[in-house]
Image (cartoon, rainbow, N blue to C red; front, top):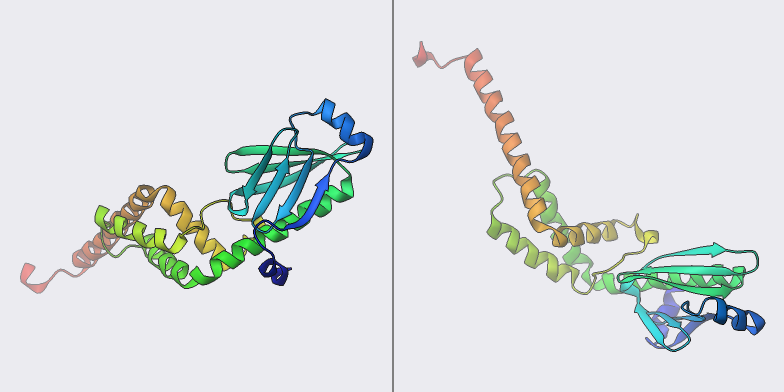
Length: 218
């Protein structure tokens, strides 16, 4: 499937699912605001409604869930702007479509991340230092780290697939994206950790001094 991802263009249709026959007529009346057809393309999902077509890029796609009724299924598709539904699909068609969509979505993320892996790892390494900072973290230091993180992330903003949640590079990317959403929160936590560590080190030093005071104090 990954090789196939490289051979198709952004607009090529890879798999399509739609209402058919009498179901198309009935669902058109019963659920006029839900999509009647969906297609997985080279760079996203295309949904066809009664009077419009909507394209959602892979970076903006979130979780897909299937709701199975007595005779037909509905797919609920989350994305960065909300949720859309396609209804009136046969159960096996809905399941096959959702599986293909998730596979293509993961392939897209892998393909786009590949040339940025080194930058992502480097930026994440700098973020990791803030878990136990050697010095007080200044605002200027965070601004510099923001710049590095933004350059590393590039266009990789959006909803990363759950299927990639165990991939180390994607876990680093998610940490970078979380930092970019709230850089000051990380700075606050880092400085709280630094102060706590300094208090511990100071106490250890004072305990040693009290136990064995310098000779000239006598």
